[in-house]
Image (cartoon, rainbow, N blue to C red; front, side):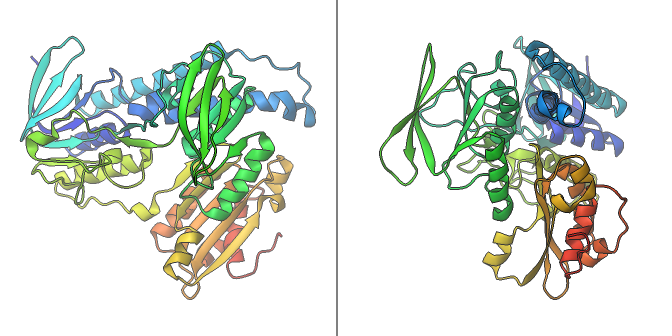
Amino acid sequence: MADTNFDVVIIGGGPGGYNAAVRAGQLGLKAAIVESRGVLGGTCLNVGCMPSKALLHASELFEAASGEFAHIGIDVPAPKLNLIQMMKAKQDSVGALTKGVEFLMKKNKVTYFVGFGKIEGAGKVSVTAADGKVEQLTTKHIVIATGSEPTPLPGVTVDQKQIVDSTGALSLPAVPKHLVVVGAGIIGLELGSVWRRLGAKVTVVEFLDRITPGMDTELATQFQKILTKQGFAFKLGTKVTSAKTGKSGVSLTLEAAAGGNAETLEADVVLVAIGRRPFTAGLGLDTVGITPDQRGFIATDHFKTSAPGVWAIGDVIHGPMLAHKAEEDAVAVIELIAGKAGHVDYDLVPSVVYTFPEVAWVGKTEDQLKAAGVQYKTGKFPFMANSRAKINHETDGFVKFLADAKTDKVYGVHILGPQAGEMIGEACVLMAFGGASEDLARTCHPHPTRSEAVKQAAMGVEGWTMQA
């Protein structure tokens, strides 16, 4: 019989849960992790971040082979899409990653229970396996790390065939002639990019009058222009009121968000990507007196819930619903449980859109600084003037720094361009140490690299950009 008494039981095996388990093992806590999926890694590794990046990478290569190769003197026959092999390669990568996470559990002496975890009262967790067998665990601490699920759209029923959510969009059996994406957020634009590159016509329907809410408006405006140039069509300020499926596809009924006459939009496949909501149903929260808010979020104070010994992290609590945020929560909560000083600065959690070009940002947007009445300076630098970007034919976009008008402390950094997700890291480090734009402007960067655009933008805050 496996031991069923632990210092900490973690419910959920995603980036928040498995990193909490690893940290618990490192700190000498006797830990267990409970995951119902049958494989660790959660949404991110299985049906989110990782498979989407596999398809984004593959589709970028396909599009390059279809045109960019010839432009730079590489003559190849017109590429032929083997979607079955592309999906297999995606799944092989995912499988390797999830096995790696399972190895980390063994390495850190974490007991892994496969089944649905439910709180049964203070210090008690039941694990119900697929065959109905139930195991009872006892513990000093419970960490809820159950993540999130796609938010449903009223009037539109997901069948994962003609109407799909992000999970279904990762495994379409064929390239649709016309894909309609409902929601102009990060998930919708990334997955829309995949299928557009592979040959689909893509129309994005968004309730708001702009794309990517939360992104700096100047970046979002330029980003939309680039996507439109690539072939995206946008219907902004528009809501979907119903969807009817048939043999010929899906018929969507649309209305202007502000009201007006209805119109119909036909599609082969519809992707509903209007956001995600916390997965907190059926966890037995009521047995310890926890009541989620109307949106399903659990209120916490430094990850402590209202129930003694019960903690929550990641997508089930307020804050950015991002895998890397959940990882930081994971380390902090276990360190608090172990008597250390765990902490996460949510102002320094970066966001990335993995389209081409990428978009990445950290800290405050210009919109937020204006609304708060903060006096700030701006430094910008276009990738058109960056030597590496020009040589690589990747000149769309720019870097923008926002810094205090008097102290030069950096409030935010925003990048629209190639490898933006890789370059935002130095801005995170700069801001974590309370750095000024001049600190980065006077730091030597290698040449020729895209990162020089970040340096030049920082120089621009004080008006001494030298390459544009």
